[in-house]
Image (cartoon, rainbow, N blue to C red; front, side, top):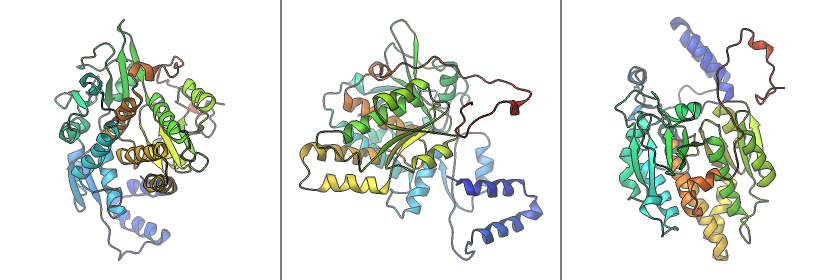
Length: 387
């Protein structure tokens, strides 16, 4: 993920004329004190959008991973940059790490029925559908997926996370049974939302706010077990934007007593703010988000899991947290990783999608675009909320 300091450089490069490109690059190298003799690698992947083939061909001097989701490419870059400490920098390495962690988490719930293991997934006719189908064998039927919109239709057309979030209704082509858990990816599989219909065929959306609440509540419960994992040493925060439903913010602050930070819209702002805490959950309302664990938090959890003097309750919690760390793609929002984490938490808590939805009641909302002749007339504070 490009840091804020480098966004200006990216803009300069994008706007540079061909004859100016080399001098702009030289200027950036000088300002950042970059050694031109030092080797470098570029990781390239593509999704199923029509522009991907042309754009990926333009940068094939680096290593080409072929068809991958955006989050999978982020994952593999991180694996390389950490010299394999984060994982194996291949698609198979990605599947192996996440699915093994998911299986380890759900083996603690031996009484799950096939109905409880079942999930309906809308792939938005994008790359996520292809990769989810490819990954299924690694799950060993611990998650049984019915996949719709798997690539034969138009990308994101009347389907996908954004369509479901904005239109507040199920995607076209998905058979939604009453009370059944369903989720939708977006086209490049970095966003996810859940939903279901009730016995009266009313639609219920569980967006990024509900996802953040579920994950952060579960994490806090683990930290607050008898004996505790040391919440005073490992703080927990949730990072949101001004698009977050007000009910979620009030529930997190007033009921769960979790730190809530509001940032400007855009995942880059949430990710950087989340890095300030030991453990943080960040999600935009549109379903883009993930969980971050600081090195100090990971080390504390590892020590508790391996210490022979740790009591059984704390040891079990620490081991669960280790698996949660491994099932989570901490590099960026990842629909596949988020889906596995959500499914594991619901299984561990023995919670239905209806019980999850009932944690708090959303303030009624609708996302709309408003055209304004004088956009400067609206004034905003730094986190994007209106004054």
